[in-house]
Length: 240
Image (tube, rainbow, N blue to C red; front, top):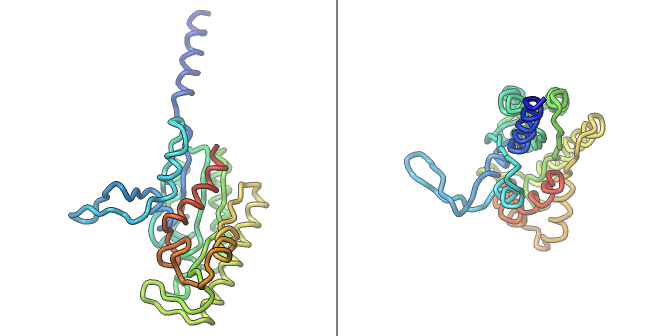
């Protein structure tokens, strides 16, 4: 009886010391989520200081020691790329909570490189990832894709010029892909962080000069300090 009692105490103590794992699965925006502009990171043989502190780093400042926040973002990734690595990067870690934030490259790469994602493939890929992660018992928060350009009009990203007509098509695609995320969130009963709506509303209220970047992003896509803060402020609601 005494041994059983001691074993129970040991199990309870071990459970209390194991941190809750939260995984962030995504592309370069998520990859930069771990940056800290006060801490240099290796870039080849040199060290650089990122210009902006990422949203995952901001979150770490506002959660307890019982939370382990794990960034799993890779630059350029689309949903097809997540399909090749979500088992290793998410399922094998056995997290309690997973944020899935993907879609910008699925749209953007269609217009720059001809390698974007068909919306049906995007939906099927997300469905597979969501179902497998849920079957493991983790909670999921789906994030809608944000913006490609913060203005109404022409735009240049990565030295690729986009005229007004192309930008309208890209924004329509972002809206359609966001609708897919919203639908899947309802279908699978996941959390939903509607970043597309949040960003569009914020930009509408804070971009009186119709600037292409500089409101929530530094280049029209990747987050500046305010963009990281906005996302961190929203994500913390699902973590705490």
